[in-house]
Image (cartoon, rainbow, N blue to C red):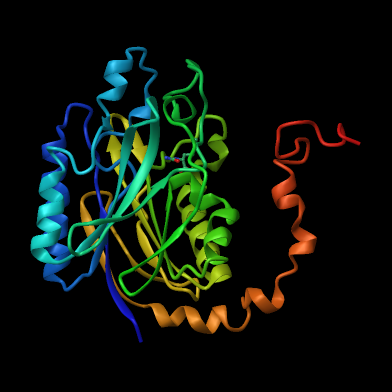
Length: 318
Ligand code: CDT
């Protein structure tokens, strides 16, 4: 048995004017609770240091950049790393990343995995950016992730906490490819932070199903890949927008083994045996024996029914 004691570190709303220091104080409070309950790892939401700013169309780039971190740890987040090291607990943290690569500025919706010594052991940049790139005033609120972030391009796994850990962010959890690409690398625990409005302006008929869909996709991803999945919300009414809670820990069986019950700051805990993955990875989902990649070529060749992966129309190259 290889146990990792995991805490979901769900957050309630963060206001637009809340400071990083205020957010870090709340994260620190959850971290202390998690550690006093014997946890090895606490998982925080997507963009856990600020309000979910893609809900607004903002023209002033310096105002937008105010929601991003230029360094990690930075002046305000260092305290969380120090506390993790002092307590001996690791964490997953979602944040807006502003980075300069070869002199070019990039903005990503990112997460990091930090070990018990306070060292960053992995960084992930969100691959599936939902929403839209242009202002759409008809919406009750915007979802401008396609405007404010560039997509990341890989789902990796890392050895940490005695197992193989992977990360994803919010909308990624709805895509089977997310889990499968990590499943193919033997992932044993997938950590996912999210901000999910109850209301989806282009599809209001989905609103009543938002919690169902949240569990559906994470439970399927866990079972079909024989992995633990930890999903963590920033929940509640944030700047007038109602966001789902439903943070939970899912076993490789697909069963929810721990869940939050509020839409505020709350922890939920589970003692996760990574060896529980084995019976799924060695039998029903023994990929090396049972998968048939020849039959799945379209998965990487095509973007959808009409477009090839490179964006050209299906059939145009024949
Ligand atoms: N943050 C995030 O990715 N939220 C999306 C909302 C989808 S509706 C545009 C989600 O998949 O939960």
